[in-house]
Structures are given as C-alpha cells and as structure tokens.
Length: 306
Ligand SMILES: Cc1ncc(COP(=O)(O)O)c(C=O)c1O
Image (cartoon, rainbow, N blue to C red; front, side, top):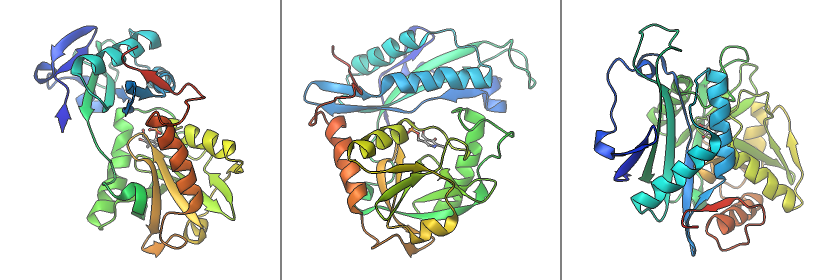
C-alpha cells in the first residue's frame, strides 16, 4: 500500500515512518479508537474529497459514543485532512483519520489517558477487486450476526467493534467469497462486513433501517439521495433473508466499496447474475459526481486546491 510521505499527528507533521505507538497504547489492548474512511477523487479541478463534512461529523459523534475526548473541532479536522492530501501530493486517495486512547493507565477505564489524533493518506484502488464495479461480487451470508442492540454501538465507527466485521470478512474469504453479509440478531439482513446493502424488488429499493445494527453509511445516504432523484421509491424495512435470494438486484455501498453490484449470494445468482439497471443507473450518477463530470448539485465535493 502506498502511504503518503507525511502523516498529521496532534497538529504536527511527521514522517509517515515515524508515526508509531508504544505497546502500552490503550487502543491496542481494548480497541478504544474511532476512525473514518474517506475518499478523495481525481477531478479536472484536482483532487476533491467526497462528503468530507458528514464523515467528520460521524467521527465526532463516534467519539461521543465511545467517550473519547477529541481535542479538535470538526473544522480543524477538515482543514487538516485537506492539508494532508495537499502535502502528500495525491491526485486521488483514501484518507484514514484515527483517534485513539494512548499511553497512561492500563485497565479498561482509560479516560485519563491521552487522546491522539492522526490522519493518514494512501493510494488505494478498488476495494472489492478491479472488475467488481461492473461484474459484481459473490457474497456469503455470514454465520456471524451483527451486534445486538444494547451490546455495542453500531452507529459509532469504533475500532474494537470491527472484530465483528473481521470475523464476517475472514469467514467469507476462507469460503471463497469476495465478501460476507451479516444478519442482525433477529435474523433480518443487516449489512456487509464494511458496506451497507440495498435490495431491488419490482423496481422498489429496500434497505435496512437505522435500527438494524448498521453503520449509518455516508455512501448509503448518497445512494438514497440519488435514487430519489431518479424517481425510485426507497423503503426502510426489515429484510428477510429470503428476499435477498429472490431479489432482482442487490448492491453494496461504502466508501471503500463505492457502489458495487452483488451478483450471487450463497452461490445463488441475484436476478440474472449480472449488474441490474437500477444499480447501473445509481452508479452512473455517483461516479459522474465523484469524477467531476456531472454537476455537483448537492455540494458533495471539497476541492483540495481551493
Ligand atoms: C460496518 C460498515 N458498514 C457500512 C460502511 C459504509 O459506510 P460509508 O459509506 O460511510 O463508508 C462501512 C464503512 O465505513 C462499515 O465499516
């Protein structure tokens, strides 16, 4: 992976190689960290960050849920992200802001420990493989469930919780699938290891609601906006597993996965087993905006060099 030359750490620039931690760092032991994944796209006006503000807002909210004191405002984080991309000279990149409890006391209650905030940038291609955007991915329903309500905080992008996503993802890879999809504790569809999921049935799009142990994805929100713009009805409903197997189309959304068709689930082809028309139409709008080819009427792009 090609990381940028510089990392931003607690308001200072450090060489990427020197951006390291001690083994007593609280987050290494207990997962007490919060992070974001953000993409900057190449456009004719230089690199532009896609939906910077909602990502930063979610980071601030995740810290609130995890009771991590973030000593920087959303505006300061936004400026630092843009400056890190500029300094590292990326045309496009993935941005990883990470807040974590640092050194101090060992033990679960780590709130007296320092909080570190780092921002890393890296050049990163297609998360689910280079032809996934067109041809789709093969998905397995995981034997792992998403966290039950009241056991953790699915709305927060909190480091320790990602062991659940790792279980889902590793199991799928071991079984020869591109990605795993988890049900919630009630047996209804929740989300992928690192993606939200949408199902198309008879021209209507259905996605699990905020109650279904999902992360409230920024790409999910973007897809919903674009689908509504296309005149497509979007419903938030519990999705039985059966509906996945019988759907006309299924697609994933996520900063890493962008908008990716799902071509099979548990080796059962989704619809015709190729990308469906609603998936393609929403992809075209999405990639039109991110590439700067289509008017950014929602103000989703923050240009790095402005
Ligand atoms: C568990 C999980 N669900 C959904 C998503 C998609 O969220 P977003 O579109 O904000 O990247 C992600 C990625 O951040 C994720 O990790």
